[in-house]
Length: 356
View 1 (cartoon, one colour):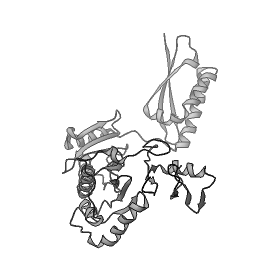
View 2 (cartoon, one colour; view 1 turned 90 degrees about the vertical axis):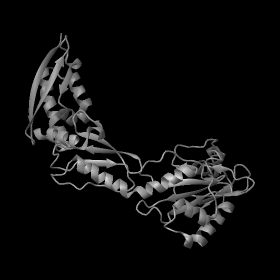
View 3 (cartoon, helix red, strand yellow; view 1 turned 180 degrees about the vertical axis):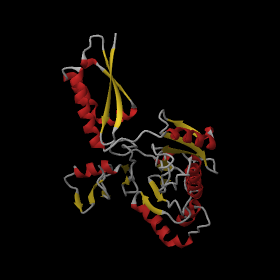
View 4 (cartoon, helix red, strand yellow; view 1 turned 30 degrees about the vertical axis):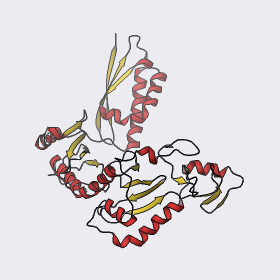
């Protein structure tokens, strides 16, 4: 048989009432008691659970525990300044009306407190997107937080008359403005072997594209001007990379914004990217010659021996550790000079950042 005690607290500076129920076990031992309270109170006590449990273990009786709990709540409220006010009665009716206007079929998720909702939408190219809307108790008078996976900053334009439909329309307008950016990346993802990122998000602006064995180009697009020349840099052995750099520099004037980015890269570099229909990704994904793995955490081999008879790839972190362990290696500023672990020919490692 269980016993229960209810208590009410009124705490400054909010002068809010909180109700808490202490459920005692059959033996009435306080250390085995269970607490029930509202979600607002749980939010206040979130970082103080261990303290409450300790007081349950050590308090002499229920009365002294209640007094200590009030002290804990005072401290918790001071450290968090305040808890969010409970939603006004019209909050829920206003929210439900907004969702009905938008359409329940566009609602992907709503939490138990109706404070977080997820909306699904599709742009004109058929890409799926998810919008996370976090509503405060002040909705609709206070702007909610809105999170979308975009490559550009996004904020909603809000007035007390703005509703969920307006949020949806504003996000959709932003999605359409990025259509060219995603079209360009979709073409790259479809027609070339992308080495990184392995699973790109909608906000990713970078692609590392295989050109040949142990040679790749990394491009970083401007989301607002996807057909302009992106930032480019090459990875691979110098004897292969240098001719590509020379072609990029000498042919850059041929870049045509009216032509797709992929075709521009082919024309300027005078190459054809390896086709997905003819080759497999494994043809470009040689394991590191030191750790014998392709992926090291999120990194892939991006250092290559410059000897054309070797051309063994390495992770930057692995090569850094290897060269640091060689008595014959030396470092000048951010460049380490040493010997290739495979062919013992000279190899250099340029450190943009420490690889660990």
